Length: 318
Image (cartoon, rainbow, N blue to C red; front, side, top):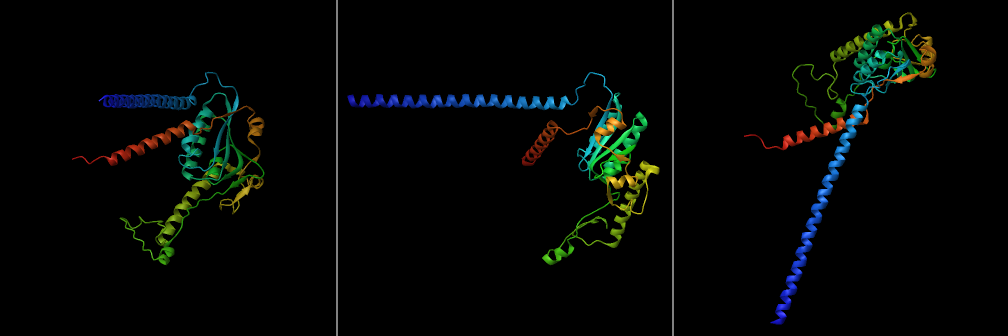
């Protein structure tokens, strides 16, 4: 009997210790979870604060009158919708630069192989409007390349300055693609294309190109090309020494472009600001997408995608 009492006491003591350990472990887990929730909240608050600060910092006024300077707007990379060389980004920068009372001239610093004629046309038109409105000279300074749509923009400037080895010109229009009709036949693949409208399959790479479609596309390209030519002639005027190759799509070195009247002389950003604009101080008005904006766009896209996924997973309404 005495042994049985001793065993029962040991059992009760062991059970009590086990329960205490489980309770302590549960308390520790709850504390850790609570601390992690607090840390996550602080991290998100810091990220949100940094995002708001970064977005607002570009808009903070200086509070001081602007001193005399040469305004700078860079046009670099492909000229395309939603890119940093798009009208969406360039036009506000042009307006800010020329509306500033301290800016004595505007320099377009160009390094671009070209891109969209629509975006280039929008920028070209706005340059002409702003120059007439503010009466300030606008200069284009070419770094490595100013071709196609980039030259479309540059032609609106009062003068164009280049390096002797810059690439300038390419006054033409293209539409490219691929045709896979014979490839599909060799692979034994049948193309099934259903359309409403006899020309809806126009430029489909898996369908034969008809002569009618080719002529239509060529007519459209010729029309855009003539628009490009008119803009260049208007911008360059009597300085342009037109030859049969001027509007053929060829491009030239900066040295050749001066002889052809496509450019006015040699010059860099600093030399044009100092010697031509007579305002050596440079102020950059280029409107660039900052890290906060990229984060905001990606975060917004992620939230939108998550919302769509959630909606798709919802049971249908009855």
